Image (cartoon, rainbow, N blue to C red; front, side, top):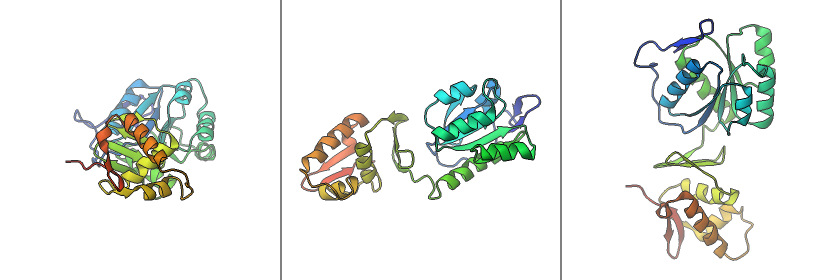
Length: 244
């Protein structure tokens, strides 16, 4: 895919779409801030093919109302808010990796954009393969240990963003419920003892009745909407159910 800043149209090299190497789905969220609907939709299609979850914002106001993201693709030439100001505002409220995408190639603009909080700077026109490589690179920089996600069938547990997805549903959990699920997701199928879970989820500082674990697990099962996903191992503790 090449983005032409002069015509504001994109060419993907053929009717079959961009020739992008397909890796495993990442489940990571990308916010595309682009005022040209054609370019925004094309970026969305390519990123979704590559396994990312994508949301679109046509201007700065929409971007500031958007949900959490792991990566932000920011077009500096927006109609309502100056690109540098928006970059600063996004950085002040989010730890997401920000890639400025623009036709402006002057060194002073690149320096100002990076100083405003961007992690990278991509000049139009560009190939879609290069864009994906830049996304992977900034993710490695902001999280050197890779994404650190735990995957088990349709369940995705992301310790970095503390978000949980099940069959593409974003599951809202309390901090303690997330900690309990992350313990189980680290090693699906392995039975963890009640004491082991309590020590890991409460940091070794729980001295009350262990019944509190059952209460949290019951709430976690309800929120996941699939009680069978977390199995009770009688006399031992809990485990994440095996997937046939």
